[in-house]
Image (cartoon, rainbow, N blue to C red; front, side, top):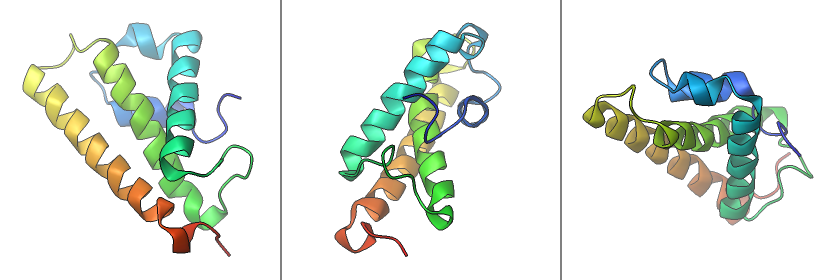
Length: 114
């Protein structure tokens, strides 16, 4: 199921201005990145967020992590618009942010939200 935990706008915003227009203008490519990111996020946090969407207080973190995962895919899909060091820096920043959010959300005490 597409677009449950993120939006195309969030993905494009996270990928940045240098993201490939071939990727960001294709509904099929964007949907594929979104689906892969949502599945990856659920696997890494060991929770099916698509079946049980996050409460409002957690939705921002979930959207940030999922859109960041998808944005990494877009950057890796076609990095010709990027200077190589800028692309790597952007990927590192997105990865660090994703890892921090997933660590927090996957901790057992955070598995059930009020």
